[in-house]
Amino acid sequence: MSTRESFNPESYELDKSFRLTRFTELKGTGCKVPQDVLQKLLESLQENHFQEDEQFLGAVMPRLGIGMDTCVIPLRHGGLSLVQTTDYIYPIVDDPYMMGRIACANVLSDLYAMGVTECDNMLMLLGVSNKMTDRVRIIVMPLIIQGFKDAAEESRTSVTGGQTLISLVSLARTCPFLFFRPDNAVPGDVLVLTKPLGTQVAVAVHQWLDIVSKPLKLQINCGRKIFELRKGVFSQSRPLSLPAAGLMHTFNAHAATDITGFGILGHAQNLAKQQRNEVSFVIHNLPVLAKMAAVSKACGNMFGLMHGTCPETSGGLLICLPREQAARFCAEIKSPKYGEGHQAWIIGIVEKGNRTARIIDKPRIIEVAPQVATQNVNPTPGATS
Image (cartoon, rainbow, N blue to C red):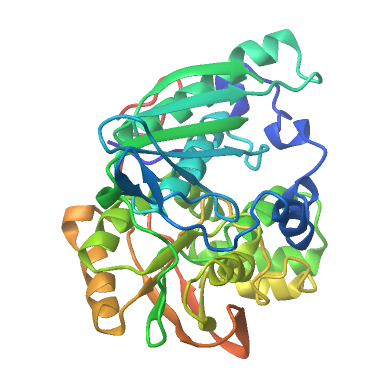
């Protein structure tokens, strides 16, 4: 078994200058409708902020949808519900195989945030840039597909369909007691985060190394002395949220969301709006990949990392847990049975309020050195595992 080596285009008979990230024009939040605009667009689809449970064929079934990353739909037979999510993602790394893994992990995290641990099926809709030659496409697309497939299999699911278009669909059929409603936070709960922030910064500066100014390059290289930036990228490609999804049931989680394109503050605000009780979330601590806070500051805070608005791709789960259970959750997720690389931090509290979320003025920054579990993720020609 071996960890993923640095991607070398020439190993795949690609030009030395090949960069997958150059096949997309828009990146980061440039690909997204702003969060406040999105909320207004969705208001017409949900007249009642809190949807009541439905009487469906004689059974009370929860229906969740607008405002969250997944929808829960009661099915006609067997007292089951369908939990469904769709996501799409642009190239953020130059390694096609890793890009496939990241895309898979990113869409599955929506299900894990609902406490769903078993996914029946995934569809993959793979877009191909019209700037890509036939020869490059024939080499690159199978690598993306293989990365997606490998990550799906590690998550105990399978890819059983797809279209050439990356938009991703993940489906799970489950009994109501196998997922939980993400709207039951109460004052006194604490907020737990299961992955460090700053992956988007690591991705960006890794791509900039050849073009940034000398002072910034020195700052970046300082970070690289402590860890390789690609390890931050690797953390995005692992479905780390699967153990957390199972432990949310064990430790009686009251609410959760995954942290992706709107940053930790944006997703915390969205989760707070969904709560039945009059509560607010207050974040005191920000676990950040080592040196990424300094790099972000050297870039003029353009990423919004310290303000909680930096996008995260395949980020961790933000979970509301009873105070007495949170420390046990954090200890359990680090246990050897879940493998290396799993960690969680208590980052804030739930207090009585008006369904808002905020980060205190001077949050404590917790620097986190990425851990990379040993696993076979290297399809490089001639590589051994």
